[in-house]
Image (cartoon, rainbow, N blue to C red; front, side):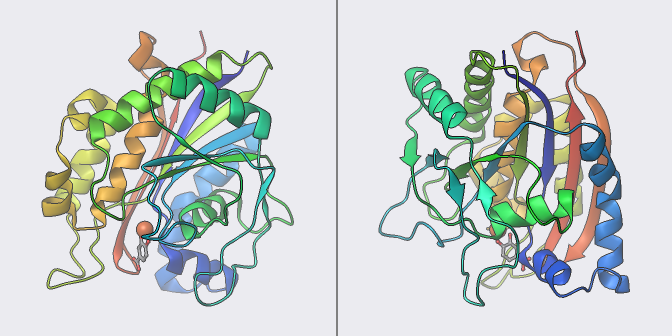
Length: 286
Ligand code: DHB
Ligand code: FE
C-alpha cells in the first residue's frame, strides 16, 4: 500500500526562483535564504519519495478569472513550467503520476470533496520554486509530482478547517492505493506578505511563528482560525498559508497515530516581499 511518510512546508517566493536561475544564490542577501534549505536538500536525498503530492496555488497563470476551481488535482502525465511574463523558468518539466492521481481523485471525491480534474496545466512559481528549493537545479526532477492547486487568490477561499479535513481525506486515499509507494505531501505558499495596497510590505513575525508552532503542536486549533484573521494579521497573500493545513491534515497523528517528528524548522525575513518559512515533519515509523 502507498503511505505518506512526511510533509514538507515552504514559501514559494518567485524571486527565489529568479535568484537560483540567475546564479545569485551566493549573494549575501540570498545566502541567508538558501542556507535554510541545506538541511532539507540532504534530507530529501536520504529519504527520497516515490511521488510528491504538491499542494500549491496558481497565480492567475493556468487559471484566470474565467474559471476559478477551489481545489484542482492534476491527473496529467506532465506539466510544463509556465510563462509568467518573463518566459518560462529554465527548470525541467514536471512529470505527473496519473494513475495515483486518478485514484486519489476518485477516493477524495467519494469522501465528499469536490475536486476539479485537470488534464492539462502549466505550473507557475507556486509549484516550481518549492521544487527548486528542495532539489536545487537537476537535469530532471527526481520523482513524479501530483500538482494540487488551491484557490487562495480570488475570494471566496476555502477555510482552514476544510483544508485540514481535505488533508485527512487525501491520506485515506493514498493509503487505499495498492502499490507500495513512499509519498511526501508538501504544503506551500505564505508566510505573511501583502503585495498591494496601503499595507504592501506587511510582515508579521509573531503571527508566522505562532502559526508554525501550531502547525506542529495544534493543527486542529489552527484550522479553526478564520480566513479573515490571516488577511488581517498576515496580509492579503498571507492567506496562502491555509494550504499548509492540507499537508498537515494528511499526517498520521490526525488519524490516531503518534505525533510527527520535527526534522527541520526555518524562518527568515525577508525574501522579496515575503517572510520565508520552512518545516519538515516526518511520520514516526510504527
Ligand atoms: C511574492 C510572493 C508571492 O507569494 C508571490 O506569489 C509573488 C510575489 C513576493 O514576495 O514578491
Ligand atoms: Fe504567492
